[in-house]
Image (cartoon, rainbow, N blue to C red; front, side, top):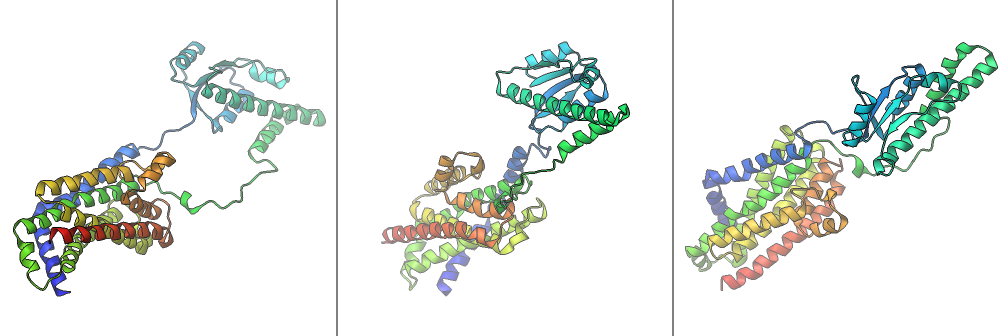
Length: 397
């Protein structure tokens, strides 16, 4: 064990001697986390209203026209856009120029005519052949139908009481009943825990960039191993009682400790500065970080064994960084891709590590949700380590 720790200490001393290593492993992930976080969050702006914009011009300004506008305002499909300077011609022009999905003009006398049960036709500017036009048209018909049903109910109330002043209260009561119907259909199926998401824009970019630059940081670790062979230091070590396995374990432990330190510092930064709740389930976070360090450390060990020159060490480190990060969703979440690409993306261990971190940060899940990603990362770690051992036997012979 002492020989393993001696090699580990030697590697850590070489890796941390240059302050550029610290700059690369810590500051670059922070810079790119902020860059990607602000890019995908719209610079902190609230999300835009997804409803279809519909211009409205009320030329009647009666109580019934106001009720119709109120019904439309409560729609989940359309969003009313009002302009005091609007005219029917200007609204039509905005629809033609596609600034509005549709426009509605309530004619003068609409309320009085509707009260008699024969409302005046509404003027609409709409493209009924488009999907947006059909959606708006359907929502307008629904709102008008509810208003006229309420008018008829109010007329019945007036006919029963014989008091014309009962019309407005009956109308208001009927319209209110639409908001609170006597019978509701409720879905009692419990929502899966994965739907409990947080709105922090950095919940994806922070772990994504942390993992990407952890792979990029393997460059320096691989160069240490290349330099060891080039200076014939490896050959001298092999003449001692130190076994090949101890040499590999020493290098591996050094890489893992460096990665784990990097992860913990960036996790603390994310918790305190970016307000990411890594510590909500500290055990799960530590498990994912540890297995990710073991996996990426195994990859670094394999790169160090394969590379014969420093140029190869650079190439073998940067290629996995770009390939595994892009494929694994470090740049763009796999959730926004199709199922085929999502399945292909999980060939990358980065995807499994991101699943583990996002289960904690975005979905509010605990240790159980981190077990599968951790198991996948351990599988990759074992694969990379065994490949490194196999290759190292040939290199050192």
